[in-house]
Image (cartoon, rainbow, N blue to C red; front, side, top):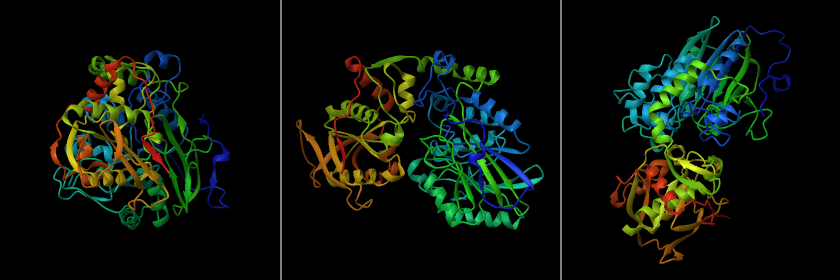
Length: 524
């Protein structure tokens, strides 16, 4: 368990011989909260009130309020910032869109946030509504919004705030492929993160700002690249890849902070399970002298703020009837963790792909492809509620059926395995076909080595020249997660039933659903 106490072992000294620096700042940070306003389980799915009382739950807005207040009390100067993706993930977003996020972030007194790709899930309109409600800046440096009336002149690239008499520059960063991941519209274009950040650093430096923080929703790998290829960035608060950085947790991807040159990179996993707490000391020139810290685990030892808990309960009222409806039963734990489903066959992937194909098989559809990025939680053994299903499939995607060539299917699978090393959501979960891929081959150069399709109960090699009927979701069919080859499909119908409803009904068909793996995806 991650310690809530800062230890001297976690200190990283970057400049010897300095006895006392001029300015200290505590950077409190969150990322990828995804509308987890209620406590969650150790599997990042819903956690019952009974389990919460028993001390088995994590996070939630009420614990976050307490943790932020306690952290602020430990320091003379602090800021609270977010690395993006407050939107999407539970019924709170489905029902309220960004309104609850705005209310809770205003309550906690955030000082800044970057735009995550999911902030564009419902287009610029919902993002603008959120921006009009929050009391802090939301930033995005690597995009041109000048042609989008809802964002032009409103969405800044960077900003300057003051704390303890010192100026602090903040720069926002968004995934360069957001146009593939979400729905920003045709009027927003995205650009290289390094050039965008350096341009804003130079602007801030010219204004006399020498303490600069990048709020980055671009992933741990991109953050390291930005740190290595820019000058003048002191701290990068990360997001997007749900990366845990820690000095004590064995599941951490890297140390907290990760130092690249003179830049400190931090990230605190996701879903409000942790609150990042980085203590930085700067000298007069704005250079980091020390950067120390450790994410705080928001477990049962962190008390829930009573007023916030009551407010979340009130907001949950309209959701309860939907959420508590028991729709099925599971005979075992159904694995849906992103670290599994985005790199290999997983049980949730098989369930969803099978459900999709089952729903439209009588239309002659023989292949299902689901993007793993659309699968957001596991399902525990026992009764399955609609809330559990919506936790897995929160995006209100609809079934899409369409016709493409066998070669297009191969190209789609090639896209799906093209970014496995980055654990991207395009990894395909499938039904009606089996495929083998070779990780030793460069992405886009023929990683897919074999594709077999089910024809009359037997699997045969796919014919690149033959036409096949497929089912996916409307996001993938429209080119999301890099599946642009599906945009030119024929016989398209994008307005089928909601994928969550399809999955719930499939699970309910035959008693207790038994999760399984059958080797439909093979890695060489």
